[in-house]
Length: 266
Image (cartoon, rainbow, N blue to C red; front, side, top):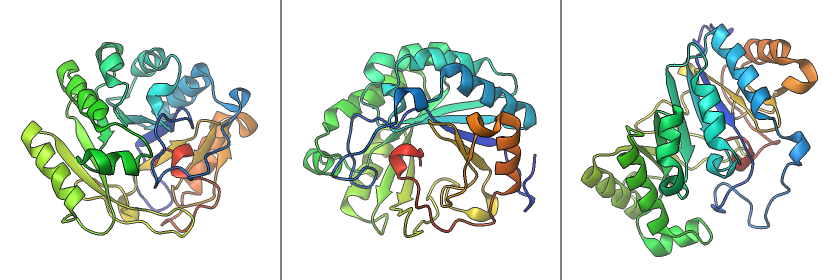
């Protein structure tokens, strides 16, 4: 499956909730958010129906995001449902890791293959500052739980201000090396201003090879992170919304005035 610029589209990111148990500075506004109403959030059946259709069109990789996907009630059941879809060969999740000690083994048994865990610093004071109250030791326990459960390779997502040589980034690098974890440096981005960059250690941020579509928790298909384009599967139906998102996927990102990272999944 190819878009109008001959990029192969085979990756679907699914935001299952706009809620989170942290309040990271670069993700959520300090004044808080207006959460989606329960009736506006896609049901598991709706998510699975869309993912099944997407797989029939050529999607082979799914990653669950949020908000924080592990706060979605029944998330293990959703993982089990998605893992059964024919054609999906790469199934992961991006998480802050806090709930992994409780859920890692069940997620693995349900069919989740691997996790990306957000970790921007190994300094407990800085972590509490960045996340507005988070406890670093909770995340470390989550990382250990993921490793023990076999949700590997465990990848760390580290947001950087300007450089990989920043003290926080270097600390995370050392931590990753000591535990044999993969590390991805993600330049700090701004959706509204259209500021984004290439992910170091990954493929994100490179528009020339972008292979992804996004499904938000309320059913919008987003063809581009840095775009206001969206096509709602409840309003248009799955096939029409999917087709429009694929056809209208832009060559490169510009700006997104409708979303923040907490409700689009990054």
